[in-house]
Length: 130
Image (cartoon, rainbow, N blue to C red; front, side):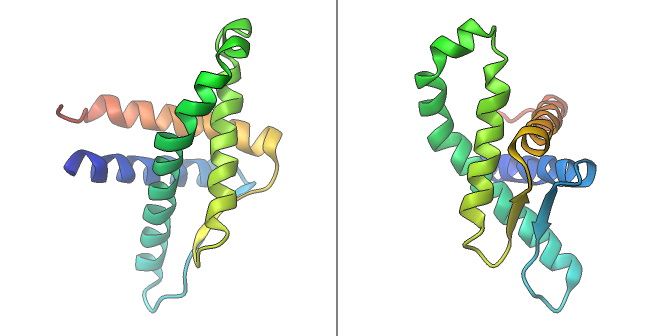
């Protein structure tokens, strides 16, 4: 349970870094009396949705796209990660707070690279006990 919460926080921090660096990625907050609480809650909810998409959908897509991933020497994984970011953007549009990605090619690809780097660094600095 603690590892799951830790993973959601890492996803939220990685999404915050991507939204800070890439101008085409924004996170909308729900209306709240405390602005900071609204921003933190929005990033945590989007991090939760992003984690669920990566846990449920990404393994299936990765398995089905294994031939093209091998053919491109793993570079197609960037496209898969960008697709998961776009799927998260689509799913969170139905929530009061959510993620919005403008363009697939530049915003989602660069955002997925940033999210992957930040997630790897955070996981390397504080690995979860298994």
